[in-house]
Image (cartoon, rainbow over all chains, first blue to last red; front, side):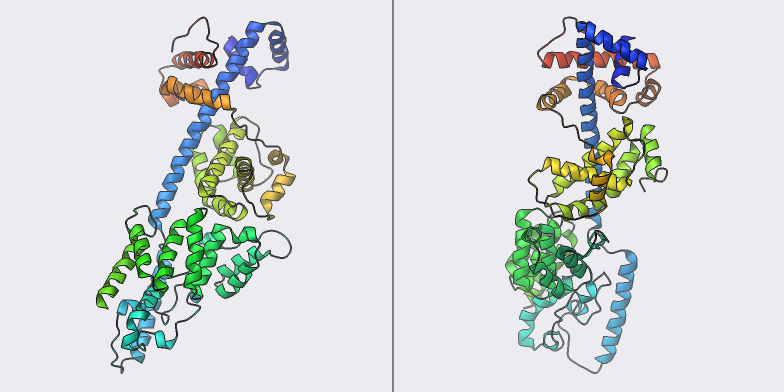
Amino acid sequence: MEGDLIEGYFRNELTPAERGAFEQRLAADPAFRHEVEEHGKAVRLVRLLGRQALKARLAERGRQLDAEKARSGFRLPWRITLLATALLALAWWFWDRQTEDSSTPLPDTEIRRDSAETPAPPAPGAAEQAEPKPSAENSPSAAPPAAESSSSHEQLFAAFFRPYHDESLEPAVRGEGEPTPEEQFRQLYWEGRYREALAVFEVLENASKSNANLQFLQANCLLATGQAKEAALALENVLRTSRSRFLPEAQWLLALACLKDGNKGKAKALLQQMAQDAGSPMQEEAGDLLERIERWLQGT
Amino acid sequence: MANSTASEPGEIIKALQSGRTEVLEALYAQHREDFFRWAGRRFQGNMGDYEDAWQDAVIAFYEQVTSGRVTALRSGLRTWLFAVGCKRLLQNNRKMKRFFWKDAVDLALLRDAQLSEFEWDIPRAEEKALLERSMGVLSSQCREILIQRFYEGKKLPEIREALNYNSENTASAALSRCLSKLKDIVAVLAGNPKQTGNGG
């Protein structure tokens, strides 16, 4: 069949003899040549159609993966959650024993639970999350009643802020020779050495400094070292450029930076936006923090 | 692992050669996040750019395997896919900022001829226009049988089974009819209609 012959030619499946005869006929017979060209165009179009269909299938799979990721959000593996709970219980027990003679009431047990005296979450580097440890004067039990309002937003911040970490940030062994400043920055961030990471960030090339993903990490470092205003500026830039894979997390951190900085209005607006966004991986946390802010504001 | 039955590159290639395209979706999912992280370190792009490049890399692998141009890999599968994804990012976004880095992907692009010579065949503008216009004219059944035959490279017995035709003859007749219809569409859209029409 002629169709099979043409198809065999395009698939490179003809024997040398068949191919020779085919090419001779192509050269001699214009009608046949036209038919072969038409066949080639049609098959090429089918291949493009096939590619388009496959791309649509992969895109759909990608949307499913993103939805799964969004549902899991920032949730920690259950073993880590269990360990953190056990550590918190232990810390509570020690704290309770040490203060059982004290009659000083605590303003908000939920806030106290997550204060700087609480063991840090066991995520990598999280042990140094509160690098600028709140001073004893700021701790709930030592704070004078008049200072309670101003310190509560700090306490809420401390309760909710945790420098972003996921396995993707783990620096891989790559390349040759000395690590570049960017590699050093990533390494220091991964190790939770936020002050040192910030120092290295300053010497990065401009191209790296303007990388929104690196700016997001820089903002984490700034927040971890108590520089809320600077962190907010960096995060606003990340959100403005929309060129980061950490956009939902950047919005969440911006809300926390505003909260720490005392800008409750903006923090609430950002949190409300996230709490109403079913697609946001931070929806649950945002709702929770909003509720606590409201409780705090009602109590002051 | 791409899935429980095809984890090694050789197994994945064999699975794709035998028409098991579900392996491709598993492969796409397996390295997707990793590619985004890698690309995020190398380029100043957005998620859309990375997603597009990653889809194209996986599709390129599929097309190279099913066309017989790739039967074994000199570089690892992940490296192969990342290298093609990298080429796609550069091809799609010539002005995209990039960060100089040296890793296995760069070495593979330098040393592996399979990769350094690889070119993604970008459809020409008139082909894109033809594609869009023919989509609306060709029935979905025709599209499916043509794709299975000419894109996925399935043989008639496989097509008969996959699309539930009564016999191979019926499948063959449907294939001829659809191909003929597509040729008519191409001729008409190209302003060169055939004198003798074909049914469809």
